Length: 607
Image 1 (tube, rainbow, N blue to C red):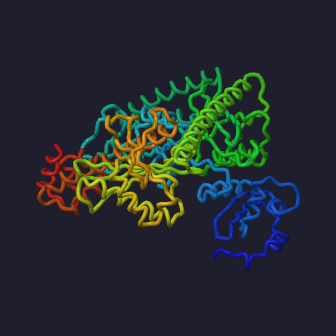
Image 2: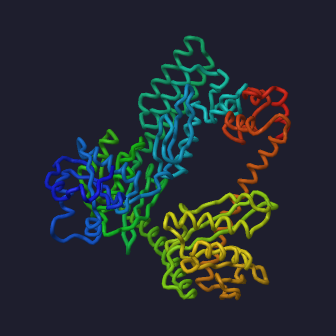
Image 3: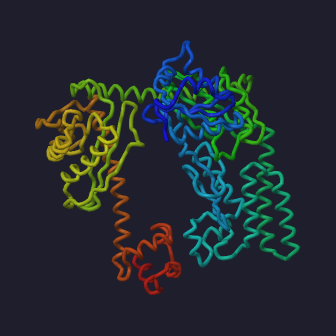
């Protein structure tokens, strides 16, 4: 249980703290995790926060809030780096430098199956199996996936599709799959392909050619001529690839280049992936500086990116930004994680200097674009605040209602702050128990749900924008009045206006029946229309998904003998609508409780 100030003696804790390496976690009086840090010497590092002397504002603010400190001693700096990285990603402490887009990293994934499936994957790895990556971008992962599909005959289909095949699919015909689903390859031979693929992706090509050649001759001697021919074709492709790689190594090398630039309150870190002398991919992160030095940002990034627990692909060389010091313990930890020596270049000369310059140019361009975009939003927010005669506006939310002929009603909520759209805060609401087509009731329902949750979470917006006229606005006013928020939240609605074109809308303010008009290019008007359009697009996408699902459900449940339970059984068996629609009569009949006659009716219903 979390300790309070009454039973935690900070001075005694600091005095008796261990000098071993480890990770420390700082909490406030409410039990919220403020900061996670690592240390070679926990005693020196943690005490430094509370010693007298000059400290930056961030450290002073953090130390003033600390109510309790917890530590974890680790065997070495390496384990401390790994644990710190994992804790930051899991808990997202307020005062840590966060690179929040882990889930966007693409991987290759080999499933944990008797006949493993090879596929692309984005997100946090959760399923059992082998992961290869992360790749710098989705494009590079897909290119690698395409190459592997040509080299190794490993299946790419979903398990639900694989489990219900009665004959080979097109992938087998074009030699992109060995059709394990119908017994065209033995488990042993398939596992060989999986092992070869895993070694190939990990960069261990040297022994693969000899192994394939040996297996090919064994198959020929045993008169498995079809298998021998397939291995021969594979050997030819691998040989050509190795020859190409040999030529490329002579001409140039492959490596990562990191660029770093800080301007104002933001910093940009860019990674360029250089393959055979050409930039094949790049990725960038924009982070808040928060009084951290650029070297501290660089170290935080290296720990985040290269100490990822699922990383399996490593560059042989990494060119770091010029003029920045990086702790040797961190570099050693990355090499230990990679289980190989990495060439680190900081004071690069000649040819490497041009790559450093290119990475810096990329970082500068992306940071300037981000700051310009932020500046535009800040200017528009200030213009809107001035027009509304408000001191400040930090958060705007816009709601829109979408339905299809009165059915499948969906409400969307988009969120913007001074930095732009906050897509992680976007929400869709399924509207229920209203008269079909009643947009007024839909607005009332979604605002009730939003304000109730906002009061509890203490994250209510300063401004709520509604796509609609006086009717929707009055319903919204009633909701705000019921929750006593009429003085805290400014209501705005955008009506279509007489001409019903963008730029000529009627603007209605909450608790004011008079329409207002602004010039088409007024900054505050541009902001309101941009937010309204985002809400409209978000609602339409959600409503279309709902309609597609309902149409499929309607088709299936209209068949005599198919009720809710059988519908769910079919979807569970095939893993979704897409595979069910594709399935043959024989495959559908394999589902428990589905006769051959009923399967035939289901198959014809989708045709």
